[in-house]
Image (cartoon, rainbow, N blue to C red):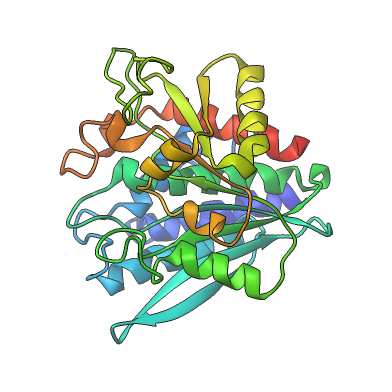
Length: 319
């Protein structure tokens, strides 16, 4: 009954957001919505809803940021996961994270997050609509399997992760991490998805100095990056990815490399002593379209993105 209700609400909402109810056009709901495996059609749909062809979701366009955050909150509600806005003011403008709770009646929680804002006037398909879509699909799958969870799950969608607020205390991830600490939350770990959609079998992968002799030259793997305290998380994730035997997973726990991979706000949680992992395609170390006008949906590999999500869900259930 619960699954049927979720599907019904989801389909109704899709008709509204796509404008098909007023136009009289027919619409078929995404296939396998109740499947316990990640679906590429869901990821594609989510990304299309995040990216607007008329407005860019950067710090200047608060109305567009509000549209995306409201859509995220409603989308999660339709999955049976309630959300609240975490509001804050920067330079007299109002911004908000979206924080959602999947309650498994546990004593500890696991945080899974992604930023929904974009750099400059760009579409930002990989950076970071891909990560947001990955979190949404992860939420769908974990909601279907809530009885298996050993930890409550807090899903967080951040704003102001890009310049000019990157590396400042106005970043959404910093404010969320600070709030967790102030509330003395018992956090098992924090997992951030940032740029998970670009892959290339050719020898295109680059690295910070000294690492190219250790790691693959091809760009056909997902990276699990963490500081020393999160070595367990990175190992657990790659173990789950190896279980599926479809997409290679590489662990990076070198402190120096973790600092160099600073395009993400995941290190904000490390500042508050949380075990933190970044799941990424390594962004500009691989993707030539990163933070350019060509970072569009057609450049992403949705099949590999689905595999990234499947590995994450498997890991979370096993933790």
